[in-house]
Length: 320
Ligand code: DON
Image (cartoon, rainbow, N blue to C red; front, side, top):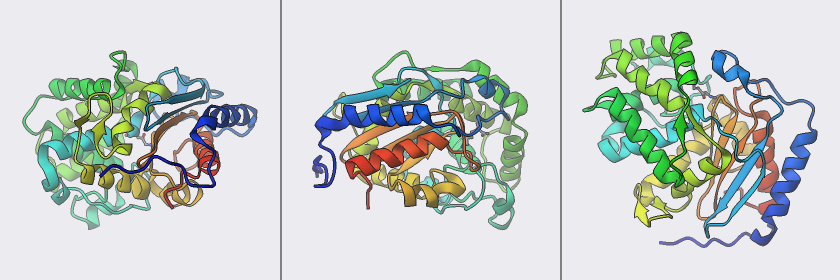
């Protein structure tokens, strides 16, 4: 059933949203402590640390942008949302035999729980879980065709053929991805990867290197806010029930061991990436993308989190 798109009584009317995002961008421009950009992937360290962008797409199709909303950045772990969507479309709920749905309380690249939990990752948004999801999507295909399929899917979602994969980032990631190699091999030893480790990581490194602007990312996330329907075509990308479940996982697991804090402060399902982006989904109301490369100690965008906190305050868009 269609949800209503109206704000709560205490929120700024949608008509004021441009003022809201302009004020947020102005506030973020003045912040001195901006966090530190990820440098464990050398190609990520070259971004301009002062960058900030925000894009909001509302359910009625209006767009509100401020700051560097048209600059593309490496979406990194945000790609896990799109791959999970593809995996659920292909395998259905059988996927949940291989990956859990609980927050890990551990860092995104942690290996500790895998031994006790027999190679079954806690959730699809930590690296181990995303590697299993990539393996599932790869099931009967070739790495290059799966990467192409994901790229076409994200272009379709964003309604923009200009979305690309940054091969400098994926190459850099492959050169330095020793932890991911360890995670994948460890799960392979438990029988939880069906394809060759090399092929699975080829997919994973390329999905992380998807480069989108805030505008493109907010457009791409709309189906999650719209009960699984792609607003551009009216087509069901995924069922309404699965869209709800993906957003539930974004809320509980989307910021790794910072998920509780993000839910506490912002109250909007969100998925972060180490490139400094966050995709926020307000069911029935809006899809939001923010980007600022400086990260907090949990690997989540410092200013991006703060911007979403401000947006939630101004609009009443917390899901609580
Ligand atoms: O696996 C990695 O190291 C990265 N390519 C993706 C991790 C990521 O974005 C975690 N985020 N906060």
